[in-house]
Length: 108
Image 1 (cartoon, one colour):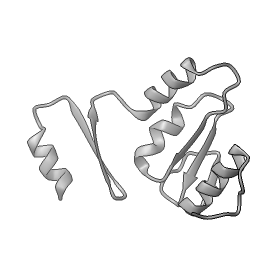
Image 2: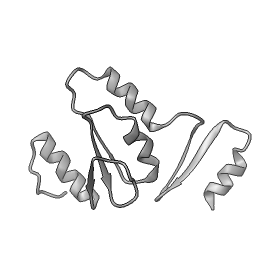
Image 3: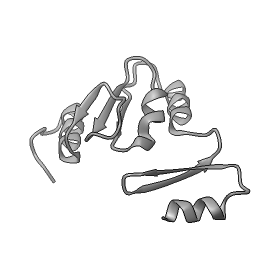
């Protein structure tokens, strides 16, 4: 419902509106998370580990914009891209702790 309201309100603007799971993404037409991910990857120091985590269809562009060797983690069933899949955010937090060298089994 709010997506339709925003679409009507912004119909004369050069924006795209995406409804996701508990999210409404309004972005300039042609700009998406994948473009930003590419720019970040290019600016990152050599051999930087790039990890992207998403739980929504709005994260598909992000996963598609990652360079080879990056780790993409889809949370739940919504994103179809992602070279890893985890059932929930608790698991993603544990993965990040393990990557950072922390205790992988502790939950906040």
